[in-house]
Length: 210
Image (cartoon, rainbow, N blue to C red; front, side, top):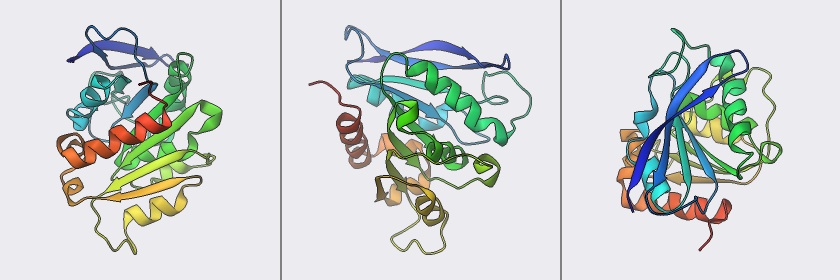
């Protein structure tokens, strides 16, 4: 089945308009799995995930990818990393009224995933090449969730950004190394092995119906 991109907008409490896309599968009816929110790294846009949102939508998830303020088509000239947690939490709250939520974060904004968990109905997270951002962390509470951290830092993690990030997380967590991840988040959707791991992970923890 082919996933089709549709424009979507979220208005934050401060009045900012966050724009993005929702991936729907033609002829599939309502999504059989939960919603998965994709949040790109600082300085990038929603296209950094390449085909990954389409791939997860094609197996029945409601995939939503957004542009952060000051990025892509969203409002704003500059982005304050300190606002990242509040903005993402607002959008997650909206999605959670429909279903449990998955989260895919990249680079610095993956830090927000450390604060999302059961209280937000966030059941599973895929965090790609994460970097612990102190500006985003600022007084951000940590929550328990099931998380998969995919990275290309190498087998030895001592002193790497991935090790710092992974150590910061609380709750059940899995670490997945693949050299393809040195190419960035797009590699996760392009590499058949990585994509299979991602699909299996979300099928299990977002309880995708058979």
